[in-house]
Length: 267
Length: 341
Image (cartoon, rainbow over all chains, first blue to last red; front, side, top):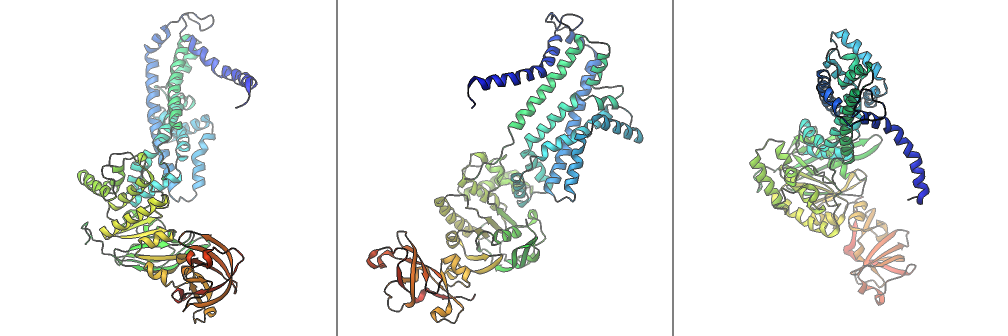
């Protein structure tokens, strides 16, 4: 431990402004969602839940929220399943060009969402798939796959390999090994990957905007709400999005901290 | 037929098995044939190829050349899941997300055995290893010795034709290890199943083996019943490794063999008793009192290092010699073993 008040002061001086800079805007957004007035500017009046009431009685908002929930859950589930299978295949079998395949799996992380979205738009229209929630969902699978792959791949260690070898030795087929040993062992990592995908999909804008048409997701609707100017209703919408993301992020942190049960040494 | 009612009357045959990893040779044309129901111990220092051989028997490693036969059937190409072998792994590899009972029943469950029958056989297997009533407990609550038994029960419950054990007692403390040796031996006898057990512990090998296979540098140096291998080793390596014997050129004792082994307990320091064969002078290099014997390292006049284990009562004045002492050395005739190689 570093000595005394100097260290504490340094910490406060460095971290204090940092946290204020990051969280003040969010705090203001949340605060003015409870504002009792037409324009979200100081001084604060209220609190009032009227903007939430209006928001939740708006079909446009609730439809979009449902569309977002469905897209987030479904695309994340599919991305996580595909990523887990890919990671398992690459970690457990001698695949020629393994490094290249891993690289190709991860590359989309470095590519702008705009480029991925435009590519998908062009590809979809070339094969005759129209703009729709489905298209947006597939787009999110494409975006989330590398993310889930990274999270799950890191969990395939030698301890895991030994357990799978023992299962095979006892007569388990490859699918039995996967479902009865690999998946339960990687449960935390798989869930964490899923939650991470959900948070990304939940507030993803560009791809959803490019690929959806009459049934937009929440971020798309919120942006169109903003076009008509700031009002506390957009603050309320932002707050709801933020709370749900926060919830998923906290769950993700908890799961990553508490890794899957590993076998203590046999001594 | 054995007491379990499954057919285990099968020989295990290893035919010219080699294994090369890139440029290194882990196994060099190894051949052996073991009768049904044998307790075979593969003994050797690390890097001798014993673990590679076990891994080939289990189907985890493909041999570069050669075949493995079980009851005359070639199993070289069979994957582990379809081999009539089961392995007790060095780290046990128990499934931490399952109970003790689910671990033991895993091999039956993946074969689609009905649940009631699994429960019955799991209970019998746990009783066999002395863990009756442990089925519902989590794996994480088991001690090291219990884990070893659970791993054993999990492998035995699927009635393997050959049970493979990879240094199964290595993680246990000495007293527990000696106790488990006896139990392994008892279980193997009771079942009449073939066991192949890898270890680098000479005492463990002597205590449990029907057949001990001494391995070194990817080859079998000697194999046979422990008593024969201990008393009449074939090679210099086997003599040194199993009995701590010293090796001298045959000519030094007027023997026809190129080399002879001298067993440490047959060496005599000081006045030669009647019938003993003189070895000439030697210099004491180190001497350690170990209770029932004194362990003395010597440098022979010919330059070879010799090891003697001498009863303290047979030392002049009962005194442990000091390094640098010059002594006269002889050997009882029963302790001179001509070697083939």
